Length: 67
Image 1 (tube, helix red, strand yellow):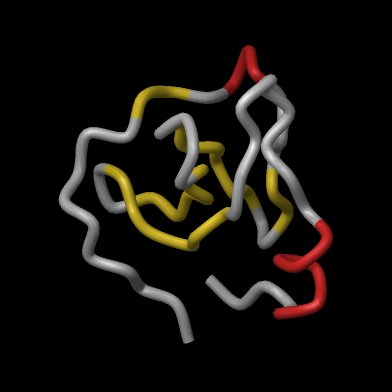
Image 2: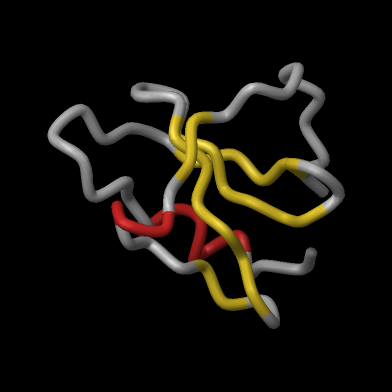
């Protein structure tokens, strides 16, 4: 996944406990994980889908894939 670092700085989790987002993987697919609430948002075609309806709880280990 190659997201612009500036984009990662301005994106925020849409939940009430929003926090910093970290790129990671869940079941081999790229996601952005909210460090505050633990939700994982899918990234499709390098576009983050920041919708609560699309988010799933992040159950993976905190192995960051950030570059």
